[in-house]
Image (cartoon, rainbow, N blue to C red; front, side, top):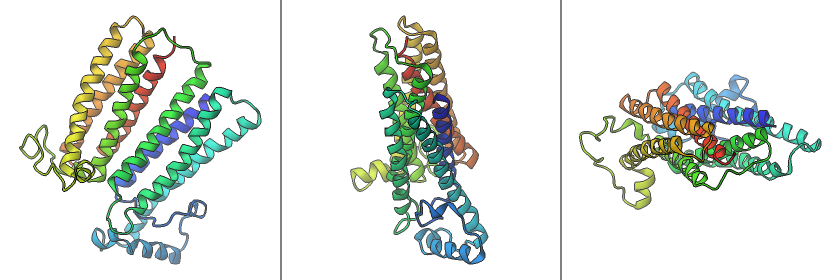
Length: 331
């Protein structure tokens, strides 16, 4: 069961990376219908391709962003989005079929049954939220709503975290508590901060904010972005390019300090096993590397390869923090 769950977790990580690539290539709105079953088959002839292209031509993104797009160019962005949706269907099958197999054979420990049920529900909810996100860009917007993008990514990370934690429990056997210590809460807090930072990054991505203020540590020569405030609080927090980039930068600084301090404290702790101390150090190193990669990605105006790497490393860092939070709870 642990190998199965870790395999599904790797596939979910692939979904996150492929989803980021789909967004970075401007492909996320290329498929304007949600067909969970029939949508597995792509267009197969000229007439079907023209019909699919015509549906895309009816949305604002085509009229305002890609008015000169040809059918061949449309096919390129179509395959990105279709691949993302196909992988989602494959992940569902890879999770559901072994789940049924283990359940029929009564091989699922009782302590894991409710977790697997939650993971199943999260997977279905993720698909619904994904379409809700896409729908936000089909009527009046040329891209999806940033807050819906953040929610879609956040659910994927919750799903991934649940898979990793449950896989570790399945691998190790019955959970054994450590001696009373504050490390359980500290490690979860670090994972929570990393999770929150990734959501802030999703707002940066959703607002195309990585294409502005490409100097560092200043903002176009100023200490703070000049267009920070929006007309409302929500417009500032979720839709202001200057605000979302500032918040993402500030949280990166906070995370570096917190992760480094926690790694140092873990190293000196008498409560933690050596494996826990190593995980704390690895997590701190990944946080620092991710911040450096983020700065380079910003300065170079988010080239595709660096932007994908930045997203991948963010998820790997979160998984390391989750493993650390899990490990400190065991002797």
